[in-house]
Length: 269
Image (cartoon, rainbow, N blue to C red; front, side, top):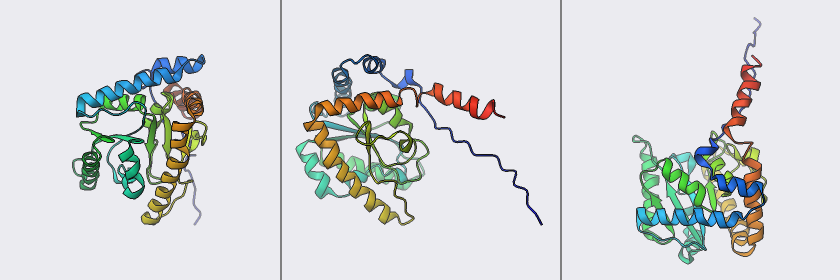
């Protein structure tokens, strides 16, 4: 008996963000006109530092790297992943060279997600001057973090990330992405130019093997590329900020997404 395949062609369209809601217009203008991105970024960073102090009573250091991470506390997103080997990350937190700000919520019925949040809170208590957990995650916290962080960390287990729009918000604000190649980042990443990848797109059904591979890659890129650039090559860092904004500001704005839906789906059919 023959079969008839009437399946429609799958047409991928990447989600995008609403720029007026999430992106600092001054950063866009400065990038377009060759202005001083760093000074404006420092204003946003100071605003984040002030915000954290008001909420948590902790004053982070302006001249030290701030990594932002705010997401739903789902197991595949691995929110506490960077803490896996404290022998490596601990000294960076103790010295203050790495400061990390987390926020996010777990589903009420997700006990594993709740455990992840508890782990983040525990690390904030252990490293009170370097690790922060902001409670009651909402759009205000999301906007502060995606504007004021220096680096946006994203480490889902590939290939489970749907899109990752928070990374787009960060990128358009000149906050450099450090991410596994999942969701939107494989399309956008120009490693060492507009951010960094780690994990090389590796996939495995063996969760332990996948996590080990990604963790080794995360620590390697953080220690050998991200930190040296931030602390020793300021000009390159600012160039990367400019390229981050330039390469994402139109491509991942909602206008492009709506045009794609119209041109590729509605008008076509």
